[in-house]
Image (tube, rainbow, N blue to C red):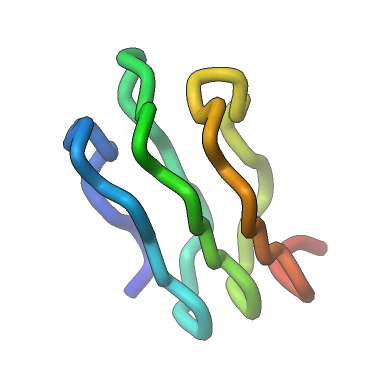
Length: 67
């Protein structure tokens, strides 16, 4: 898995994409108000989107996610 569709679902509470080959990760422009967990560890990300639209994020994993 090298990419995922842009996240737009406002009812998401967790996104677990650990251990893929993601090069990019994008979120929609609307706030992901319910997202609490975002796990992108062990991917090949080159950049990250701004997380300002994710006010309730409490668990973020980027371990070995970027070069």
